Image (cartoon, rainbow, N blue to C red; front, side):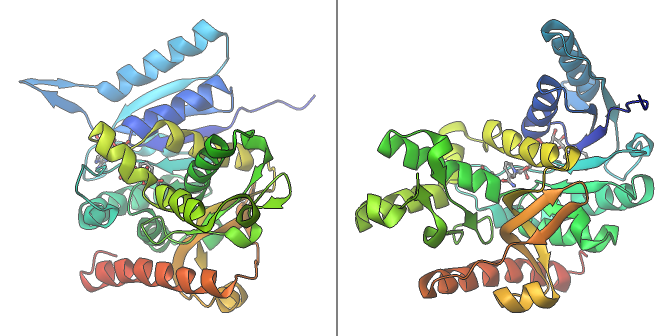
Amino acid sequence: MADYKRPTVSIVGAGNVGEHVANLIAIKELANVRLFDLPKKLDDKTFEVVKGKALDIKQMAAAIGVDVDIRGYNVTADGQGYEPLKDSDIVVITAGFPRRPGMSRDDLLTANVNIIRVIAERVALYAPNAVVIVVSNPVDVLTYAALKITGFQKNKVIGMAGVLDTARFKTFISQELKVSISNINCFVIGGHGDDMVPLLSVSNVGGTPLKELFTKEKLEELINRTKFGGGEIVNLMGTSAYHAPGASVVQMVEAILKDKKAIMPCSVYLEGEDARFYEAYDVCVGLPVKVGAHGWEEIIKINLSEEEKQMWQKSVKSVKEGIERIKELKLI
Ligand SMILES: NC(=O)c1ccc[n+]([C@@H]2O[C@H](COP(=O)([O-])OP(=O)(O)OC[C@H]3O[C@@H](n4cnc5c(N)ncnc54)[C@H](O)[C@@H]3O)[C@@H](O)[C@H]2O)c1
Ligand SMILES: O=C(O)C[C@H](O)C(=O)O
C-alpha cells in the first residue's frame, strides 16, 4: 500500500468560527490542522491562546479516539510567523472582525480587507498550491480581494456563504413542514447580504416545488428570515454565528479533500462564458459550483426566472459596489 499522508488544513483566525472549523475537522478525522492567530492581551499579560486552543482540541481528539495532529502558531498583524503554512492543502481564512448588533457585514469591509491583504500575501508566499476558503466578511468582496492579492488561479479561491444561507433556508422549511432536512433541495445564490437570492425555481421538498407547498405570504416570510438569518443570530448573541458557519466550511473542506465533485453554492469569480451566462463580470458572488480536489471546478448554469434575474442583478450590483470601494481606496 502506498504511504498515506494525512492532508493539512491551515486556519488563519482561531476565533469562534476558526476554532469550530478545527474542532469539526478533528471530530471527522479529516486532516491535520494548523491554527494561526495573534497573541491576546488580558490585563497586563499576553496569552498564546491559539496554542492553548490547539492543545485542547488535540486532547479532545485523544478523548474521542481520533488520530489528527493539531498545532497552534502565533502570528503578528504585519505578517510574521506564517512559515508553517507550508504544504497546506487548504487554507481557511477566518481572521477579522465579526459584526455586532446594528452593523451590516459591509461595515467590516475596510478593517477586514487590511487583515486579509497581509494574510493573502503570506498564503501566496508559503502555500502557493493550496485551495483558499475565505470566510471573513463581507465575504464576496474579500474573496475577490484574496483572489487578486494571491494571484491564484480563480478555481483555487472560494468564498463560503451559500452553504450556510442554504442551511438556514432548509432549517426554516423543515421546521415549518416537519419534514427531514434530507428531503429538502434548495439553493441560495447571490452575494452574502440582505439581497441574497433563494432560488425558488429549483427548490423542492421531495420533488414538490416550494411554491406548491406554501402560500405566497408564508414563503416570503421564510425567505426574509433566511436573508436576515445572520442578523437574527447577531441580535441574539451580540456577535455572529459560528456553529453553522463552521459546519458549512467543513462541508467544503471535505468535498475538496475527498474530491467529491459535490455541487454547493459558493462565492466564485465570474469571467468568460460563465460571466456572459449570468451577466455578471469581474466579481465574486455565490453560485452553485462543483467542488473537488482542484477547488471549484465548474459553475452550474441555471436558467433563472425573470424575478430571480432581477434579484440576482441587484445582489451582484451591491457586491460590485464593495469591490469598487476597495479599489478606489487602493486597498487591493
Ligand atoms: N462567510 C460567512 O458566512 C461567515 C459566517 C460567520 C462569520 N463570518 C466572518 O468570519 C470572521 C470571523 O468571525 P468570528 O466569529 O470567528 O470572529 P472572532 O472575533 O471570534 O475571531 C476572529 C479571529 O481573527 C483573529 N484576527 C484578527 N486579526 C488578525 C490578524 N491580522 N491575523 C491573524 N488573526 C487575526 C482574531 O484575533 C480572532 O481570534 C468575521 O469577519 C465574520 O463576519 C463569515
Ligand atoms: O451575520 C454575520 O455577520 C456572520 C455571517 O455572515 C452569518 O451569516 O452568520
